[in-house]
Image 1 (cartoon, helix red, strand yellow):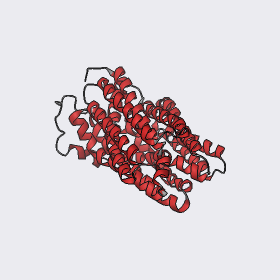
Image 2 (image 1 turned 45 degrees about the vertical axis):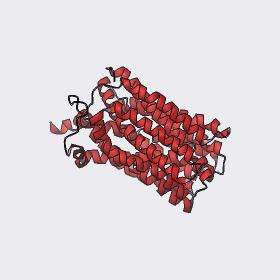
Image 3 (image 1 turned 90 degrees about the vertical axis):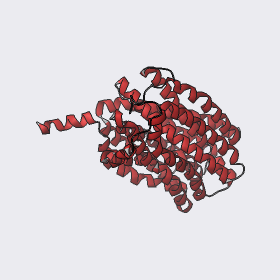
Image 4 (image 1 turned 135 degrees about the vertical axis):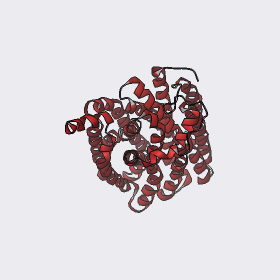
Length: 401
């Protein structure tokens, strides 16, 4: 890995986020076709999608130690190759039954989980070196990738291009770009700049963050945000197709609107956060997501669903990235805290698919989406845990006087 500065590292980090989003959306956009080929119920589909979360949940608790030992660049590069392999296995295997899809998604989940923590840790280090709030814009890069993946998927679905060809092409792009881009990551680990490469973390150090109340609260907040975002990613297309009795192309286009709204909010969100602070902006975001979700669920016409999707996507945009920034406020402890927050947050991806799937089998997938409303209410209560340390100090300073 060559030596580099924060600006080249910023661009390289953006590439990692964009590629991760592109890979994810390319798979998510084809879930309805995979379901049709496998001929499974919503409950069984939920269990199949659960395998992706299981792979991630195995990787996430290990990610902090892996990053400390090998570095963020090594982790992102190697995990992108593993994710690509998983896409190929799932894309070929869905022709033969659920089992190969499950195996492929476990690989995708493991690769994505470790990749996600590593690029967020590195993004926080770049953010701190540049001296301004840019984490949501990195996640906007992820959303740009998801929008690109979804928009490309629309004509592929319309032209009946097979899921197999689509997943193989996506894997080739990811493996061809990401391992090269990480060469421009920052050369030192943010949590152990003087540790020799390959040195393991001290015994028990990885567990320390699990005993920090603020870190745990941020993790629960990220869980609520991830459930809201993940429900849209995994189930919005299926819900609109089934609930509004429309075509696969329309369902994919609604999914694209959701991702476009998230991208826009993540791009413009940092300016609002810098001006008003994390807590007020996040409270407004949660409210928008709640209103949008309700409109999608109870809307009687597609235009209402599109409007609700727009609000839902915009409101769900900032929760996850701001949670990652909050977990990274102390650079020395960022890898372990981000690993903890990600592990808690990804529980949403573990619980989300089967919960929505089982409810969807009884009341329909569209109505099952409303369970996210309860988590949005909980997120509103937990938002203060994300407050910036310097802002908290300023708010409490008059009392100390």
